[in-house]
Amino acid sequence: MDRTPAAVKALLAYGQKTGLITEDEYFYTANGIFHVLQYTPDGEFNVSGCEECLAEYASAVGSPAGLEGASLYEKGHVLEAILKDLLDEAAERGLIDGGVVSRDLLDTAVMGCLTPRPREVIRKFWEDYEEDPKKATDGFYSLATDSDYIRSYRIEKDRKWPAPTPYGDLDITINLAKPEKDPKAIAAALTNKAKAGYPKCLLCHSNEGYAGRLDHPARQTIRHIPLELGGERWYLQYSPYVYYNEHCIVFSDEHRPMKIERQTFVRLLEFLKMFPHYTIGSNADLPIVGGSILTHEHYQGGHYTFAMARAKIREEIHFKGFEDIKAGIVHWPMSVIRLDGKDPERLVELADRILGKWRAYSDPSVDIYAETDAPHNTITPIARMRDGEFELDLVLRNNRTTEEYPLGIFHPHSELHHIKKENIGLIEVMGLAVLPSRLLKEMESLRKALLAGDDLRADAALAVHADWAEEVMAAHPEANADNLEKILQEEIGIVFSKVLEHAGVFKDTEEGRAAFERFCEEV
Image (tube, rainbow, N blue to C red; front, side, top):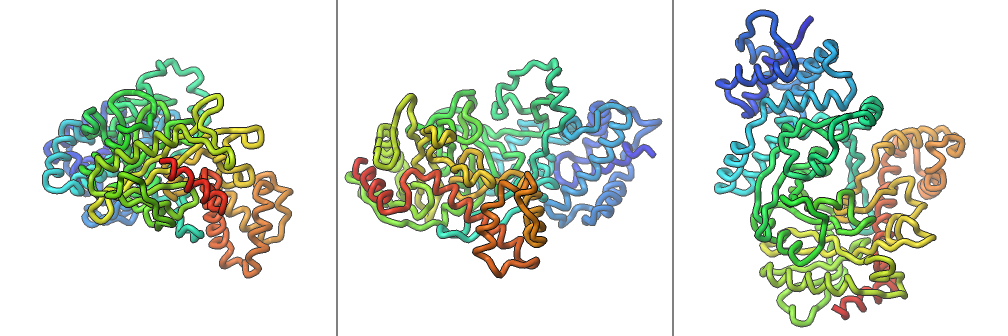
């Protein structure tokens, strides 16, 4: 049975209920979808019964029939079911190969038919902003989820939990929203004739409306809000993978490398003036300590309270000439100077001084060298509002490597790689672990093996966890079938706190604290 006409009708009703389209746009939108699907209805297609079709899909997934009062995930499951029928029919007709990449390319093109044009999105955003900045971001985020740019039904699969540590509760996530690489797409990409290099990267403004290809995601549903920061054109968008609530990306109109400088602090604080309910920060600008994308200058933010923001001041410090700014060293596994003040220009002045001193600072007693064959020192900055004042956290970073630590001296060391080996970027710095999806299966297998008393070293996938697992079991004689999963989750949190300790340039030891104080005196 051909489900395409009913699915298109349900999609039209979905679009009208979520505000993506109006009822007057039903035929216009339907014809766009038919074009994308290379589908011609058998005989006359009318738009009567659209709400009934939507109700049928909603009922099948347990959502309110008209979507009134439906949660984000309920709406997402309705949309997922509708798109599944359209994609299955397209695969049967040979339009796509059925792999996850080709399906994502096609359903994004379908949803692009429902997504409002950029000028309408921008107009609505600033209209809402005049009333309330939060209303503007709330509406923009709803658009991102309703249009399926953020696939809420995939986000729902993510595993998240708080883990108690000596530094407070850290946030642990195993992100499953990003689909695994499709072997068919990998093979096809090798012979793909599409020109690489356009768009230049995933963060360029030229992604807006791009149809995508096997090695570059479709972006017909992405929308960018233009901003002026530091006298330049920047844009606001949301991340499709949502590592935390309203995970946004703010990126330069110009495709240029990441750079931490005075203007970085200016832009971060200007963004806070515009959106005081958001946190905003930047990855550092050097390899190893700089996160994943260094080729396009961008920041990341969102409406979320990170563990770092909850951390208290370990020790107050005072910078001569900046008595109007409250400063302190944060009780955190990494090396963080926190600045609080009402005048953003004064915060920028002091932050720039700290950056300049740190760029050139060496202390061989604690393995810190500003430069050997290349510069090594930089900063990961994070900004937020607290009690009506600007707050700026400056995380000191160093990316030097040695033969003993080829991935970085201030990087998770090898004994922690079974949990976290990747770079420690902005999100991890703030206390949110983004762990690889492999861990979900490995931890479940580990739990079963421990309960059964199996030899962990006999299983290649579990052998890397064996030493750690033995330590965990020795520390928890009370472990049983009811509590072992929770114990493993909490112990993963402890590992993550050690990951951050390894990334800290001044260790939380008597020697490390003295070295941190020497640097502050240098400033």
